[in-house]
Image 1 (cartoon, helix red, strand yellow):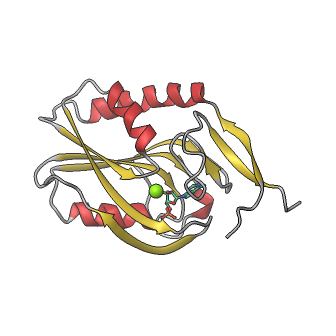
Image 2 (cartoon, protein in one colour):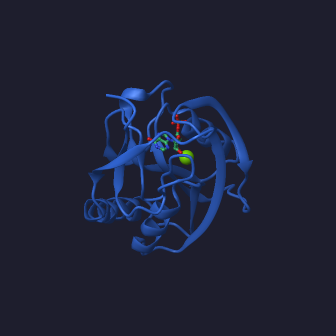
Length: 181
Ligand code: IMP
Ligand code: MG
């Protein structure tokens, strides 16, 4: 399928993101100050930049693990069916866990992943999402911490892709298609 032509308009600068990551990391550190070791779980692939920035702000013993769930194909609409493409390497029973997500959109992905991981009996499980699109929510879930609430726009950058492109942008931008008004 040919790529529709688009441009990317600035939405959240790298500087704004860095300032917010610092605030959020302080909250996470306060919440988990008594942890033996925090398992920080990044949801691949969109959270890879965010998780890298968050863990470097945490003055706590941490372990990093990844889980890949897929609800989007290569388009801009959720398929509403969540598949686990890659599970965690480690056990989380009795442990402190922080799930790091890029965007909560319809909510299907985060709800599915939280259900899956809670069934493994962690001691404490919290969630953080860089972005939240509350107007798009279809299931009742929200992250414990959110970086920025955004309107119903398709965004890219800072790890987030459009059909695997634009993950390497240092800021968050919104996709504007040139073939619509
Ligand atoms: P949900 O299951 O509908 O909440 O979708 C969550 C996932 O869809 C996120 O982890 C993203 O990977 C992807 N997603 C949602 N909105 C966007 C967007 O604006 N740009 C790129 N990916 C998105
Ligand atoms: Mg994702």
